[in-house]
Image 1 (cartoon, rainbow over the protein chains, first blue to last red):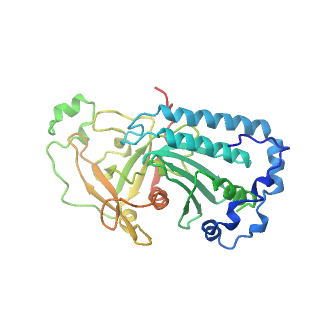
Image 2 (cartoon, rainbow over the protein chains, first blue to last red):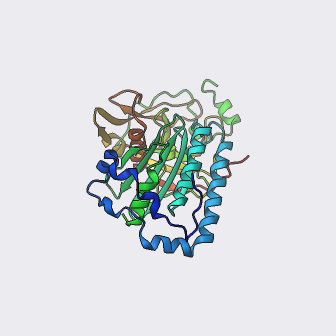
Image 3 (cartoon, chains in turn yellow, green):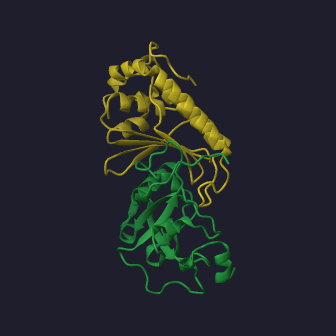
Length: 173
Length: 168
């Protein structure tokens, strides 16, 4: 997985052959979205340029934090919560790297009582969650306002999640 | 401990929480009653956006019935006498729990709860997420995640926690 991408690097080419366009699962999920506009919004690149240092620092901080989750013991939440296993922590690391490569980072990362790691983001009225289960499932969820949340499975071999994040956030949705 | 109040005292648990041999409260729950839960606040974690990490589909969700608490802070005690002073507290309203359901394809999710007093924590209740009336099994992760987020959304924050270190 790529790590932090400098501001001058091109972001868009990663999505020229994006599976999202032809993947019926994603197509259903996105509804009537305009797939021809599957590029990052110009202002995102600008923001990345202006916030390089801050972004890189935050990226490092999150990486360290994910590593620290491996120190959690069983019952870490005082309710018998399972600690994240090596799989969940590794996928969380990959997720952060992938998100950084499209110019976004999670707002918060935490262990899940159900066993795993959760990465959350709020953008405007949208709530995004990447839910990584110890058992191997990876889920992307989004919620808007009072609407019921919607979720899809993520293929960790392709990590399509970053395509959709780039699309959603780049288009301010 | 078998409900022995002396043991509960030795654990440092306030006397108002001791069961003292009392069984399940036969009066039952009223719609405006609350169930308190504590949560551990992780560094960098927003209180406001989600407490979904506190929701388990595998285990019962422990809570304290407000009717038998002096105040919400009682839920910071565990039955082992640990007082989680840095934890935050959320509350679930009985009416909200009873009214909640989520249907996804063949799955119908509901919330059930019961008073299940512990020797030193009389207000203790168990809340369960049920699928088609039984335990959750064979439910895809993407559905479990939705359910956890929705159940978390029923909770109202009572007090913030304090950032806690992950390391001992």
